Length: 230
Image 1 (cartoon, rainbow, N blue to C red):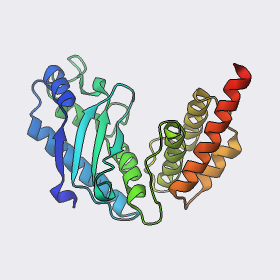
Image 2 (image 1 turned 60 degrees about the horizontal axis):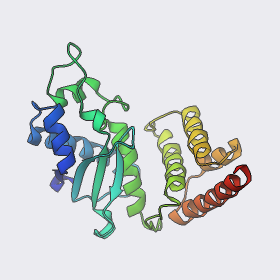
Image 3 (image 1 turned 180 degrees about the horizontal axis):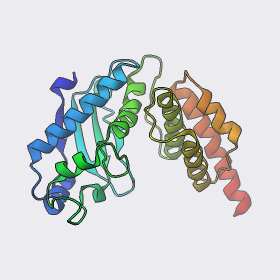
Image 4 (image 1 turned 180 degrees about the vertical axis):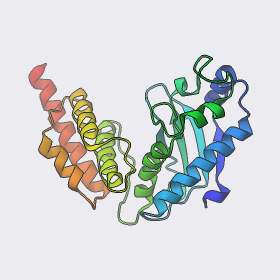
């Protein structure tokens, strides 16, 4: 139950918070994050299976522009998870734009700006959409190995965005998602076609095996492309 949700800070998150936002009250920030997660989960529950969460850890990771969810693979049904937050997110802009030191005031002023507020409604819906899928009967999630993980991310993100777009919840519109799809796969030595994207965008029912199989195809094509170009 999300009402019993426990929010915890990792040591790295706590240190970044203390350094860059010293006026932010830890417990108030935890309440803020919990409230917004509960709101996102309520929205997701209204369009799909009920999500169960016991504990969320907040951590920092410089590899991502937005938040990213990781599941605790030892927890039943992944009811414990970690939200990785870019460290620059908790560095406040300089005055006079925002009051120095209070991160919650900054987030409130940014409202649902997905690029600057990691806990915007759409960001949280997207990340917990992965958890909703993983907990869905018949999805049969399995942690991907490292070589397939980048391809899984791209494919799964597009499938989620497509479904959310029908409910007005997507992070980006269809054209922006196509741009993301092409850019990310080109970085992975794949030249995707519009048909590849459209096939994913139209898909309504999917499971993890389908995602993994396509990720394996992309990975194999990428290895071949590297050999030819190398």
